[in-house]
Every structure is written in structure tokens, then in C-alpha cells.
Length: 150
Image (tube, rainbow, N blue to C red; front, side):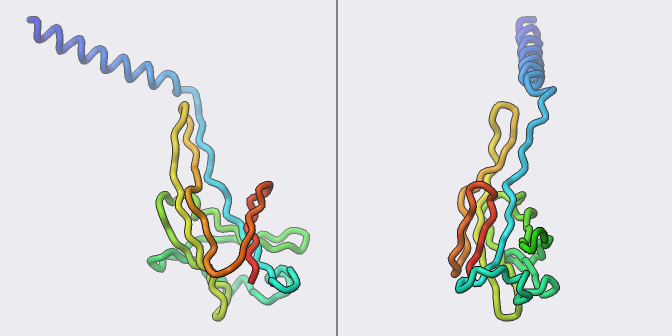
């Protein structure tokens, strides 16, 4: 009888402790999306946007990961500034590498390491490492825009 009582008590405590924890977060919907990855490609000599001056054509652009799997992207055009939006890459956790093929002659490699974190019922994403290979680049702290100088 003592074993049955102990077993029932353990089941009760396990179930109620899960419910207590679950109730704390039950009404909280809190997931922040990963940061955006938007790229502006400019001429390193004169700072002209290479989509705007037609050096790069959107129909020639391809983006793929380290195993050759295609990655979705969009061209955002506003005020004659053309930005390549590759937000899809922020959802993949762990170390990854990508190639942005802008033309037959121009490819830009990037490395990215993302981590999902949980805190007080919320999930958010953290960039552990980001780098553009072989080209100078700057990332705006205000907008997150990554300007790559080709």
C-alpha cells in the first residue's frame, strides 16, 4: 500500500509541476524571428549599387548552401537602392556556409552560425558568427543592412 501511495504522489507531483510551468507560459506567445540578411552590393571604387547600375541582373543571381541546395531570395527595390533579401538563411541553426552567385564571374561566400535561445517563455535567435569571405563588408547597426564592396 505504501508503494502505491508513493507512486500516486509522484505521478501527482509530476503532473502538477508540469502544469504549473506550462501555465506560466500558456498565454505568452513570444518568438522573435531571426535577424534579416539583406545585402547591398556596391562598386568598391565609386560606391554605386551594382543592381542599380545594371552590372548585376537579378535573373543571373543564385543562392545556395554548402551542399548545393537552392536558397530563396528577393530583390527589394526602393529609392533606386536594390537590396538582396535572403532572410531564409537565418532560420537554420548551427554553422552553415552559403554562396551568392551574382554572375558567372562574381560569387560571394558567406559563413553563418545561428543559435536559438529560450528565456522566460520566449525564443529568440542569436548570430554566433557571420562573415563575408574575400570581400570587404560593413553591417549597419541601425538597419542590419550588409554592404558588400566588390
